[in-house]
Image 1 (cartoon, rainbow, N blue to C red):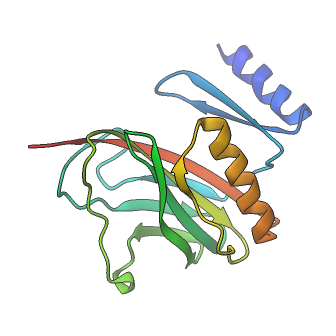
Image 2 (cartoon, helix red, strand yellow):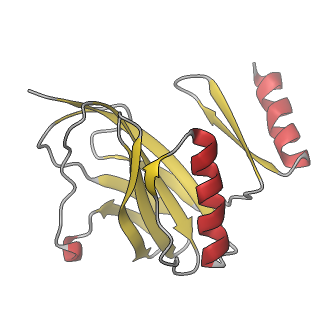
Length: 169
């Protein structure tokens, strides 16, 4: 298994693609044309990745950055609807819990129930007004992400993904 992972990582480096391996579900994702940096070193809900929240619960996100920059949070609901719920928040390097106290709002989970995917998108320059809104396949989301990075004129960029489950009482 280690040889396979090493080979895949080497292939990713040689082909200028981004290779993401999710250890808990042994899936593999390759995205082309978007070179990412290792800036986001931790991103997860406050109860941990794969945790449970109930409709009406508040969720917070723990994020660690290796350098300062801007974070945009994008959620994909269990029904496939994708939307941006935080845009271009500047964070210093280090660990943060979002939302920050000065943001004066909360992230409260709501319907539909099921698996909620959240992505943290990092840029080293303030992102443009471009946003995420709609229903995307994985490929369409990746294409929208490339456009987002291009419109932001960012040189350093990163994406981290986490998930949790929403249930009703």
